[in-house]
Length: 418
Ligand SMILES: N[C@@H](CCC(=O)N[C@@H](CS)C(=O)NCC(=O)O)C(=O)O
Image 1 (tube, rainbow, N blue to C red):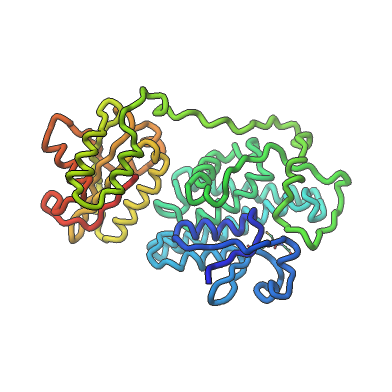
Image 2 (tube, rainbow, N blue to C red; image 1 turned 180 degrees about the vertical axis):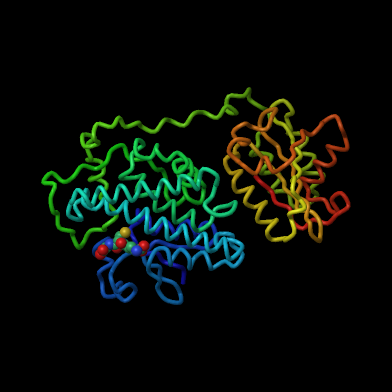
């Protein structure tokens, strides 16, 4: 039996698990015909979660409720995942941020949100305290993120997944640009996370709210309705939120994404996707087919080739940590998918392992946005391939085809970015 998620398809608490499942490669299906307030009140559902709340994950070994617990369960389905860190202290920090974002961020967002969607009484000092608590938490998060790309370590962990989902509700319905601009590192972090393919596949497109929803007209007790999802305001309600109650703040609409300067380069005869396809589809006679094809396609005007050499190879003492490090780098290069192809070799059969790579980039230089946005870049020494040097071209060939022994050593692993 597959894993089945019981929740509305817009539930950010369910997203925590769906995103985790994307990272670990586990299939989770949405329950068929789930209707909030109806499906979660049936006797069968109450057997899975006695308080009738969602999300609930149905597994072959029984149900699990509480969204963070469900996400942890799915993360642990793969033993080799980096989502839970690689040491006890990393794990401790992951749990720390999970609790922090649930108790200090989510709780305050909900306290602020509920009365404005008519699910709780509006009491001004309670709202003030919720906003103050939220700002205090975001301030601390902002400070941490000023010097960290990820909450823990150097790649996405469960802490990032859960924190981003908790921030998601805030950005979507309560926190305008004026509110969040006080926390620029949180903004940068949040938009980077939601644009990671494994996140955006689940979350879809997201637009930051342009206004704080107004209070219900009576500004007084609206009874919580039993059949309504507490944290899932209806679409119509969101749309209707007028801008009048934003206390006169000038709200800034999200700017359209500027065009990547690489799209403005003169057209190239080399079609990157054709090369990636040739690379992936060549199973035999690699030299004769793929390597030959590469040089036939290669356009030295429109593209450049680069060798990279990890600067801190003496740190690479544990094979799986080294492999994870390179895996994280390739994940972060996702932003360059349209403009790059890369091979990363982990070399040696005993520590310290060497990490060397070959990259093909659109344009004559390494794109600036890659240099700026992917912090791994500066961990490597970059040298442009001299195309007049046959020995360097042969090195390119060997890196593309995972030639072994590479420079006299065995390959522990070879990863491709395509
Ligand atoms: N701590 C729980 C919160 C669950 C929760 O509040 N679920 C809401 C929807 S997001 C719900 O099911 N409300 C229905 C109700 O209260 O009956 C979790 O993270 O899973």
